[in-house]
Image (cartoon, rainbow, N blue to C red; front, side, top):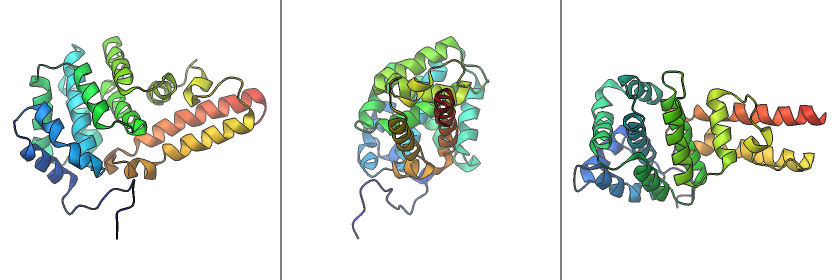
Length: 241
């Protein structure tokens, strides 16, 4: 039976074995060669591609913000639930990224190209980068500058960025309309439709269908919490709860 578009193809190898296969298929032991080797697997929605892209950008961010510690790498390992026997593969990608002379923005653009036409996947990447940046429970100004650079490289709008940021640091005084990506003048029924569409896009099943590793779908819960908070705040202000 033909593979339905948008669904992850079954592969007898584990994600970590597929990461190893991508590393082995790279013509050179450079991060650029590894990224090039991922193109075919990206078209098959392979979660290993998402994982390598995230490892590379996490490493670049840890190096570029000037305050890198082992905590960021360990936070990544915990987030991914990396088995001890597979840690070497993650360390290899991490090492290739930190030793490469290209900067964070350069690889952010490369990841944007890799996932071109898939803005929701790029939101997933940015969400995970926020998690790594806040491994020490603080969003440092230098880290936020890099996250904003990733937003710009990915071509994401301010609403997408605010949704993700609020999921990690709270809604605070952020405009709930901006978080939902809607105009202040929006009719309440249209607002409900916009909310339902966001809920559909950020559901864990939707994330897995677009190639996000199963270990990371919990980020959808935090993002949906920010979306729900913004939506409920608007309804309360309108007396439409």
